[in-house]
Image 1 (cartoon, rainbow, N blue to C red):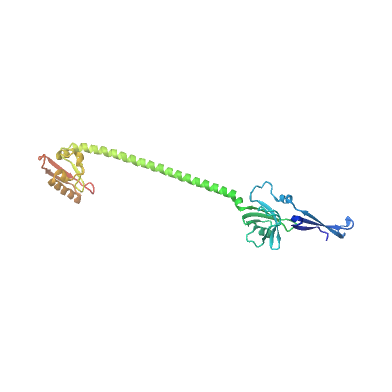
Image 2 (image 1 turned 90 degrees about the horizontal axis):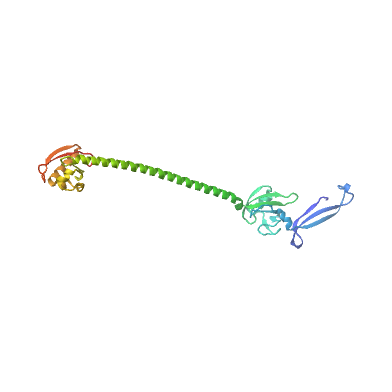
Amino acid sequence: MTERGLLDLHRGAHDRPTLGFLVPVLAGPAEQADARPVIARLLALRPIDAGVFALLKQPGLTARTSETYLIRRFGNLIEYLSPLLDGSEPLTKRLAVNTEGLIDVEALKQPGLFHHGRHYAFTESFAVSRRIPGTDWVLVHRIGAAEALAASDARRMTLISGLAVLVVLIGAALVLVWFYASSRRAEEVAERYRLSSERFERLSGFLDILTDSQPNPILVVDANNRLTYANQRLSEFSGIARAELIGRSLTGVLGQEAGRRYGAINRLVLESGEPRVEIEHLPGKQPSTEVEGFIVRRSKHG
C-alpha cells in the first residue's frame, strides 16, 4: 500500500486532541515509483492546539449565538471534534444520532444543505453544513433562530408600529373631519333656528300690533280650554295682566257661564273641524261690550 493515510482525530498524550499522518517509505530509485516496494511506514502525530481550532471562527462575525464546529459519526453517536460555544472541549461531547430534531443529525445525513432544528444545547437554530474532503468530518456553521430573526422581527414590529400609528392618525383625522362637519351642520341648524326664531318674533310682534289694535278681546285656546294667546283688550276686559293670562282656563278668565259656553263651542270646532262665529254680550265690568268669537281649528289641539 503506497497511499498516504490519516489517523483520525483522537485523544493522545496528556489527553490532548491529536491527529496522525501515515506516510509510506519506498525502496529503490525515485524513477520507478510505481514498482518500488514499501519498506516502512512513517506515522507522524500532531497535537491540535487552540490555534488550529481558531481557524474555524468567522472573521468579522459578531452574532452572539453564531459558531462553527466539526462533527463526525462515532457508532450510534455524534461526536463533536472542536470546542463548542457552551464551553465543551474537543472530543468531550457526544449525542445519540436518533436525537429528534437535531440539526447535527441532518448535517451528517445530508451535508451541504440548510438545516433548521435544535442544536446540541437544544436551542432553536439555523445551520448550514459541508463535508470535509478525505475525512468523515462535517463542518457545521449555526446561529440561534431568535438572533437570526431578530432583525426581521424588529423590522416587522417597526412596520406594524408604523401602520398602527398611521391607522390611529387616519382615525383621528376622520374623527376631526366628522367633528368639523358635525359642528358645521350644528352651526347651520342653529343659524336656521335663529333666523326662524327672529322671523317668528317679528311675526309675533306684528300679530300683537294687529290684535292689540282691535277693539274686541281676542284669544286662542287649546283642547283643554286653556289660553295660549290673548290680546291686550282681553287683559283690560278681564282685569288680569296679559302675561298671566297664558295658561289660564276659560272659566278662570271669562267666568263660569261664559267659560263653559265658549268651551262647548271649542269642543264643537274640534269635533267638526269647521269654524264657528258666535256673537255674545258678556256680563261683567262692561256689560255693553260685544265679543266676537271666531274659532278655527288650526291643529289637532285647536
